[in-house]
Length: 310
Image (cartoon, rainbow, N blue to C red):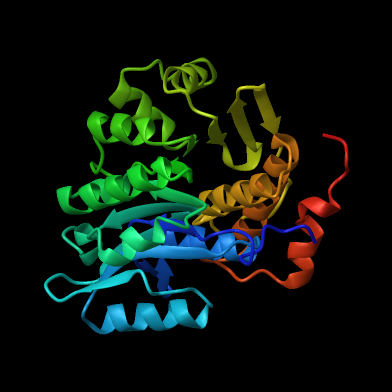
């Protein structure tokens, strides 16, 4: 299949929170950088998470799980002073509700020598708003994003508004550093309020954001309704397949990783969008944010197997 595999493409990074999702049934590795990086690998990229864990049992266990899933943990920092992060998750009809604990290790990500070196080869980077809740991580994240962008890498903002952990300044500075912005319908009301936008007109307002910040893409996901891609070529609507939802954790990360992989492989927005929503649809059919998808599933939904039109 025509995948943008690692021998040709540099790594794609997911930077931010790395933690344990505490479900009623037990703990599962979570955080957008892990989910994004893992799904990027499933889509044929070399996904690498960048974050920080504590020097404790949860941190040791988290690193072992990442390694067992085939992820490079070279850029996971270990902090002796703060605990590995965790998030309490309850599900209502498959929709997650989060209780995010404060002052965790991922609030203390540093811009290290390793970060400075990897910037030279990075193909793309995905970062979010949640991990910027602390000044320490925000400084490191925004520095890494700036340097990746200056080096020609594709910087993607994942707007993940949780609890009170965002501000207008964080949103505006993050958008200004990005080429793509991805958000969900759940994030839109908070984003609209923070930026003083009309929350009842997402289509009009998101196109204004795209043009005002000179973005290549604003991607707006709406769960079972699919996604809308605001591009310089116009608005493209991508329907989602009908599936039985177990939970939606990680669906947005899968969408972003799939869209990125397809675009790096030279696919049109339509084919890339179709692949992204199909990848996300497979993820919501299983529990957890980063389920391993069978090879036959990945082949079936791959862009090479889509209709050639579009």
